[in-house]
Image 1 (cartoon, rainbow, N blue to C red):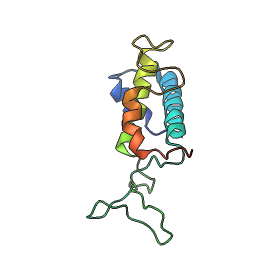
Image 2 (cartoon, helix red, strand yellow):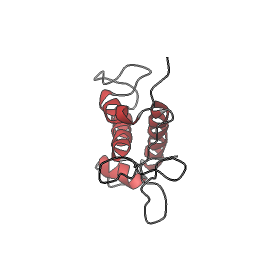
Image 3 (tube, rainbow, N blue to C red):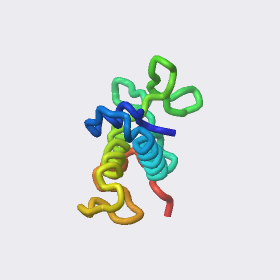
Length: 124
């Protein structure tokens, strides 16, 4: 599962060569997995909304998702941005976290700020 394409990640990194494609793909997979874990059971996909900004539900009460021309669910913009930020951190600071952007075991603050509204909260 990858929430962004290699081409999109390379665009984000302002990269125009193929030398690091395997590495960047690994970072996309890791970042997508970290985002998925943070969301818990929250959906990474863009929910359709009606004119009142309420989610459109199917006959079973489940949300309807936007789909692309291939019929695949569209990843929410906040999720895409969070993955791209993570890929950027992983690519720029490959072995460490020199700016203290996040503590061990946690995602960077800009990532959690984007994802928090989509997250399914933990039960006490």
